[in-house]
Image (cartoon, rainbow, N blue to C red):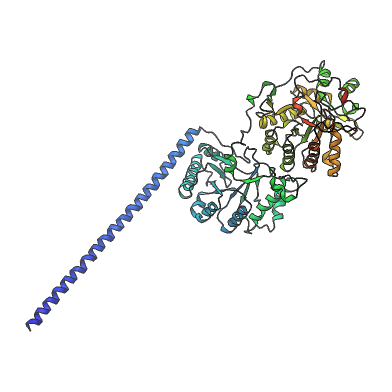
Length: 613
């Protein structure tokens, strides 16, 4: 009995101890939970404080940046001023995975590099897509979205700061390249914000995504609307923009991109006449497909546009004018400075001139001081890259240079091609701004003025100003002279007394027609065109027509010009030294200068009874 009581007391003690041991951990756990709640509350509070602090810092950065900027405004760039042989691809709309993958795969397969503009929302919400872009080695840049109510410059600066921070912290990208991805009600605020942040603002020269084409079914449907029949190729370093998530068909954006590459970029490449087409990529006429960063960082080919013309020699500045042209001395100056053409023989082709002046005017079209065996290659008009780039390649291939007489009304859309012409050692003259002749001929062959004196003066003056704004600082021949000349080729080779006087007053030093036109804009075959070219630079006896000026064209209608010239120059290179048929190529600007006078007697070896072209 006693043992039973002892055992019961032991059990009771154990129960009490167990109860105590259970209660203590529960109380401890409750206390721990309370501490965790307090910690979470503190973390949330700290987080809010941190966000507020970051917001204040961003705001202060924006205020400081705008104060330092002093109201300056950035300008959009539809192209990058560069002679690099490339086209620039850029993209936006990064929310949909499938079309994005299609584009990235196509770019990888075709060695294409581009810039993808990501907005603040896309960087936060579509991180997988952003990392995918990076995994393909493509560039990221800042995409700006419009702010409700228009937005202030300060708000846009803050947006740029936030996007930059996300790009740097989450994706390891630092960039100052910005694109406005949605139309804004307050573009002036965006201009000021981008300037304040020292960013490079890009737009596009070509927007692939056109309105009302969201549900397009075929590539042709999109391409025809974008280009029509007029645009044959893209421009050097033009910025192309493609929105990846726009089309209903997820395959269409990539397909359109590849079609543009095939039909508007690959066609810029010159195909050697003596090689298979699949060997074309071996020459350096091909254009790369590059990102904005690629072109910006290629400083070798970058230039400032427009050019600061104040550094040009006084007699080459756009505001320079001759004051010596008078009624009394016009005849003398004109006859000295007019290089005519064999077909300009009738008085009705030179209205306003006297019979004596027409009789005395040059009809040889030759540079009379040209060295033995020397001829001159010239190109008129203007064109797209697919025509001009091929000509540049042929000249480069044969190590010769030419004079380009440029119609300037479309230069602002593609200054890079004009800059490329002179960067390779060629020179440039004017072919007027909008290619209006000094006079016209009616159905009866009578002359009439197309433009009044003031309009014609503005025509040729603006032409020179536009040329100077692009190439006024470029020197050729080891830096000895400017590539820009004051040579003028009158459209259709027509000259009137009034128009010629205006041209000379405006500072043009020589009016240059030529000894023969290849009429390549209407050639019927490669063989016939090359034969005409050969006939212009050679006499009937096969000797070189010393001083001959051949007129060719760089427009899209002259589709055979580059190849025919390539054949002509190749044959010439294959002739042995000393062959009377072997010619050299000179630049007009080296001879039509420093008092050159076309009235001088035509050297005996240049005289021909009749030049029949």
